[in-house]
Length: 440
Image (cartoon, rainbow, N blue to C red):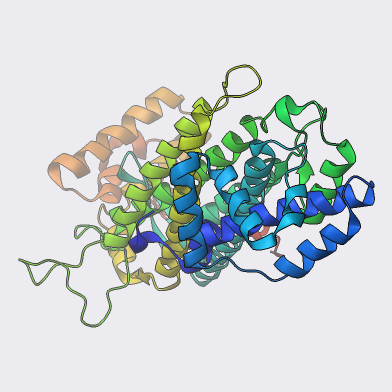
């Protein structure tokens, strides 16, 4: 992922320096387990501990491994060659009975576990921001829309409560998928444990805080585990896009009920000085497209040949860092946007009043039905007066009072009783209690 969309902590998870350190941790943990089983001399393992305890790979070390790989054409062999250069003869015991996938897949599990932890913290920031603004605007009335058209009133807080609810689902899905993907293996070629004791795998996984991949793994960890996480990230992106798109609509000049923060010195357009564009939301929409795109090759990686092939390898080297870095960036961008979102209650009120109470059409319909008028007849009476508001710009309430069919059933006072904004907000606290677990 390009630096523009990379936050340092997440980028570090995927740095070559971090990757090689995890490779080394896997190899050392396996050697220590083999020592306890009497398969590797204790003095050699002790020497390796002294040599590599606290060792951090430098840029020069990475360059040296890359130089070796130009000859070996194999990254794990290049790494082991480098470790032997540093560790001397005792390093010959590293990788005993293991295959490259034992190192690569276990390392990927560690990286995905670390990345998921960061993503969960990001989601927690998003949820805290959304909750705070939801409580702030619990009873800020605004027009609810269906198909982009005025429907019936809601509150801005209710809209945000729905967002908060969605992020609870996204968090649960990411947490589960992260656990599923946090599984490694040290079972040797084709996963039979022919040359490495199963107790070694158990010890390595315990040391690294991972699960063993399967009761019966192949040469690789099954890729459905990783696909589940990439799908969870794609769905998190879809939720980001849904909510970012809402902000974009609310910021349109004709609506202008909410607006992204616009900071001092910020410029909206190189040509038009008056512009304040929803660039953050638009950026999130674009990143969501990437996240969906990463899910597709992850799903295609599931079908490998026999006990393994490496068609998944090139894919994962790209999508694993890119997807986690992109989502990490997007979640923090969204959280900051919500924390500083400008909300315009007065404009919401203006838009509520734009159609002169037309949003009460359903209440009039139900009042007529309640007085014994057949529903379809009632619908016709209300709709024809509603159409006059659109086409003749008449006042809806006045039109209803002049309609002989309506007046035959409802008094003026009963018509007036249908027009009450508070009616639409009477269960706001109930919904908030369901979402946030608060008392009414």
